[in-house]
Image (cartoon, rainbow, N blue to C red; front, top):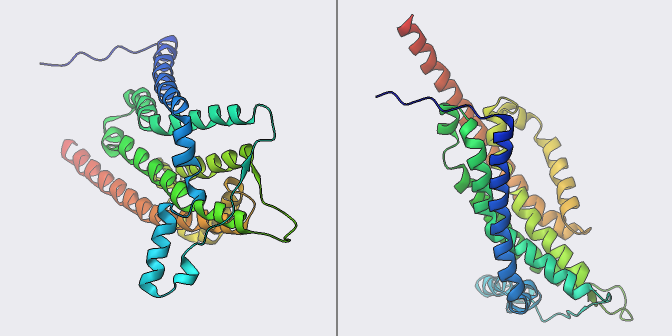
Length: 281
């Protein structure tokens, strides 16, 4: 029994479909945002301000590594001063709303991308659907991996470095909550977006814009671009820039292998298509 062809949608139908996907995504973000806002005191104490305490998992792992390697004095982080103040009347409330929105978006990200993919998917051909299988899982995994890297690596290192850094005993490090939360969000959310590099390379290779040869040839240029990106998404200090640049370079190298895999798959598909054309000729 032959399936009936799908009815072609008009431009207004597409807009209506897109509108509902956006509405569903916003509802998911707002739901998690409200939860984060309600439990904001717990979140600020146990999540946002946690990287500033020496009992944070990253600092404990470093200390354990120091005990194994005999470098306790070098790797065990000693208590460091960390004080937060709010110098603006609306500072605390604004940061509560901002952090709640970001946490809501991060929690709802897999569902948001699923809605985006549900809108794009009907317009793809069968071979494109086959080659993009698992896109939602891959994008969500890389985003959460990047968020975890930003939270467990970048945030504690940045907090420890700037809290301990001093050019004079006269100066006391007391950070404004707006500065701290904004930097915290930039590191965590920015890392999640930057970790999408392999997915971007995959699709750019599929449509013929990138190739593994091109990425290998311009590897040195890519290093410069990665350092620039690291400087943009992190605070203006060498430590944070290096910490974000190292995994980006690793992702770049992984993306070269992904691009080479896509090229092999495309060549195989072309050979199979050529054989099929010969059989039908």
